[in-house]
Image 1 (cartoon, rainbow, N blue to C red):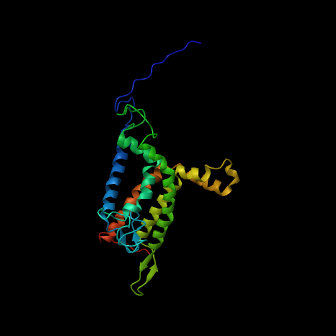
Image 2: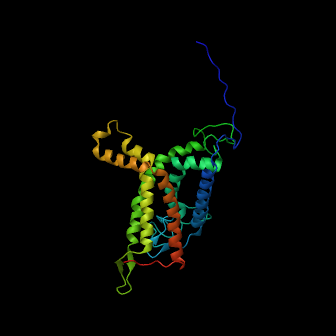
Length: 269
């Protein structure tokens, strides 16, 4: 049989493509959205104040492991292992779990590789890099710890749910105690926990942890139902990733504005 040698297509230059659509819009929007989130959250982390209002606690600072707050788990001030010369706010520890989970997320990786590193800027568009090593070498090989950050992120769901429960209790001036109620801030915190849960439980690593270890999932009916539910959620994983990202920043902003006296937290019940 005769062999036919076909020449390889020459490598495209940066931004070179035969696409005629507005391929640059998506990476530009992602760059703008993620960039704005990073600027705001880093600013909020460094503030170290106005992250609580009554029983409301910003999710950026939850849980407060050490800090000058009534919500602190292990005491006031800095953690005992924290260098005395290094600036500290409770958010620096609180964001380790969810921050690592989002940073190594499969969807976010594909998004910020395109938007920030142009690797590539979009499908069938030339990139500025001449070589490709994937995620097999340092530092990108660290992305493979995503599944372990997933286990840490799962622990935040009951913590944030407890924050919502505490947000249902308000000071009663008549008795000096607390009474059950509902306010706009309660709903804001509840939606944050809901959106985070949808993002987390639609994650590919969660689906694998639930059903990936079973050769015959039908023999584990409970896990099969959870796996099926996660598979349905997975269809909208991208949407949950963005909604939960925006809402966690908005929740911190809402609590911060209430604490500063800019917003009035309207009581519903």
